[in-house]
Length: 270
Image 1: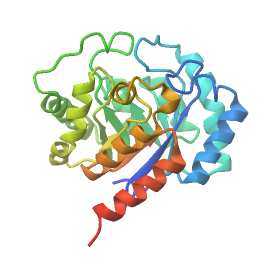
Image 2: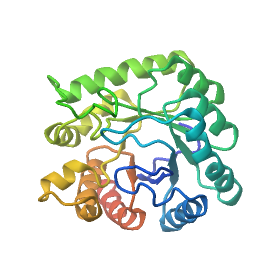
Image 3: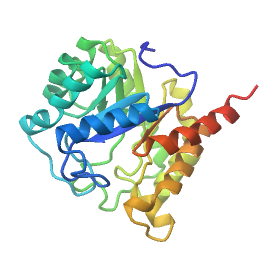
Image 4: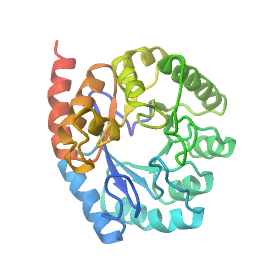
């Protein structure tokens, strides 16, 4: 595994959405200075990686152009690379955006479309960086319109096997798997994925889980709004950690870090 990633403990991936319309923090960090300040705050609170995204992939969202996405994320990456040492992940499915961001200092590609674009495979292979292969059923605009599976975990596993094979054949060594909680899944699908997360271990890749503030938590706790889902987010990420996750992607770094420290202490107790 790339030396950027050490799995002696669970890694905290801090979310930085540089968008006007992300589901939980759209517009909050659209300004460059606010984005930089928030990234530095997350690093101080214990984030091991900062994951920067310039396009919302919430259910029902519309795509943005490459030019707009690059306009949003490049200034942030350039500044953070100069002013911090924490690894930067670029959350994009566009090969050109990934290419441009890797050139200026991003060190990980987080692809919500699971490397289904051959050009993206080539970009990642050429730069020799880790990649997150995420599973998504459909596209953000329509992915939550009645998603169906015969066996959600088994179908995601088969998707991962194909992605891993394509990546390995291209020479990509460092692969992280994300089952895509909330991306074309019902509440029950999400629960089954978290409960059966250990079944992905046979693929022999680190597992990233992102449950932070997602709608299934709100639905399970009395239709709570986004800003009131912290406890549910922490409960789900602790369970994910105990069931095999090696990275958790979070909005609220400080409480997540503290909770995961306890989970790790139990998980790795001699």
